[in-house]
Image 1: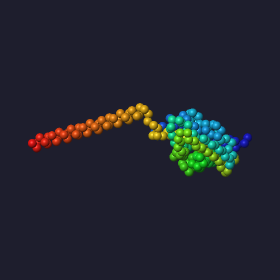
Image 2: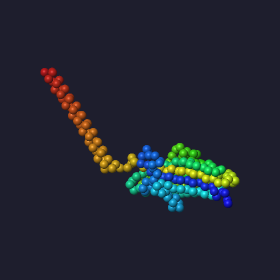
Image 3: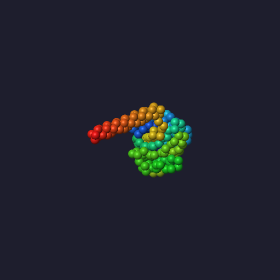
Image 4: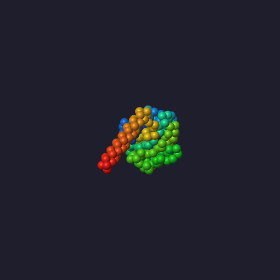
Length: 221
């Protein structure tokens, strides 16, 4: 049996929607309705936010190409900002595939990351989120994934396997969303209350001034 066929790189892509900035990755694991991510083969990120890339039988110099189409089909006029982080999970066997495979990520033709697939070169995706653009209603972008195995593999291993997680975060721009009816009423009541307080203060100051002027006029007589 050809031992090379037991070289496997598994990448789990987890996509999450975040309404604000204080939301943990553990509780945000599903895409917003209408925000779509799918590859050239029609395989898409599932409703629970997961997408797998399994690369099996890797040989020295092999390449793997994926093209993801990212589209904001949320017709609620809700823009999103997309970012991505990398999380190396585990390597097994004699070959550290996370160090022996490079990846280039291109967004609409522009290179956003180039380096080891583990994600800590160029832009360090382990420590810092990689910016993948803003998506207005109906906007579409293409993310190209090019993986290349090193030509320096030693061929006397038994087996090797590696696991990596990419986390995509679609952050909703809540500031640009129009206020709801209840919020408008709340703001109106607040403004009315504040305006009333200002008017009362002006009236009290005016009356106090009148009393002082009357008192000074009596003393002058």
